[in-house]
Amino acid sequence: GNSVTQMEGPVTLSEEAFLTINCTYTATGYPSLFWYVQYPGEGLQLLLKATKADDKGSNKGFEATYRKETTSFHLEKGSVQVSDSAVYFCALSRLDGATNKLIFGTGTLLAVQP
Amino acid sequence: KAGVTQTPRYLIKTRGQQVTLSCSPISGHRSVSWYQQTPGQGLQFLFEYFSETQRNKGNFPGRFSGRQFSNSRSEMNVSTLELGDSALYLCASGQGGLATNEKLFFGSGTQLSVL
Image 1: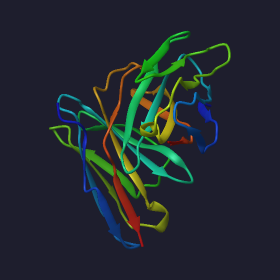
Image 2: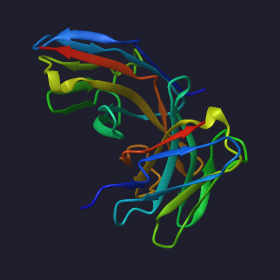
Image 3: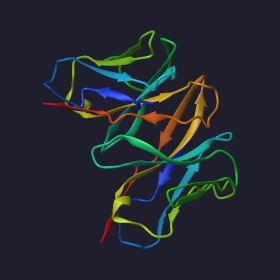
């Protein structure tokens, strides 16, 4: 079946440290891949996406590359800030009939300390 | 452009009661999907509505139902509430096209607590 596996958190970093959150997926066909972020007490916000192999999604200093050979979509940022503290969800999108359905990983809590 | 609006923001109910949650999608969007978020199960797909029709349903009991109105606003209903229904219920708005790269926009959610 289709699934997403994320590294377990929490991930605790100091400000300006390098961030990597690992994400691997299992899917049939050619899904699109997404990273969503959830700040405390809020819903999900789309952070970035990639729709085909070797695509790189980027936004607000975050990047992730769609690697079909390793079925991965790892999230990276060169220098994190305290304001990046949140839960990050990796997701894949697949068509189930006529529905564009998101399948999420379990989420990774990132805590950035000043 | 206004975002996805979910009401109420918080809800406290007791076991056996029923509850109705509301979601207003982004103007022009015709698809509304509902997701349940719990610490144990993570984010799980409940159902999707498009043009007033349920297009898909996740693996949830029949106590969970929904509908969509002609203005694309959607409601979900949970009857005979159980303690395990305590969760954050998220609504996602989209254009409803048949492409996996479609962006879905989420509301802030309704936090339901069942006592």
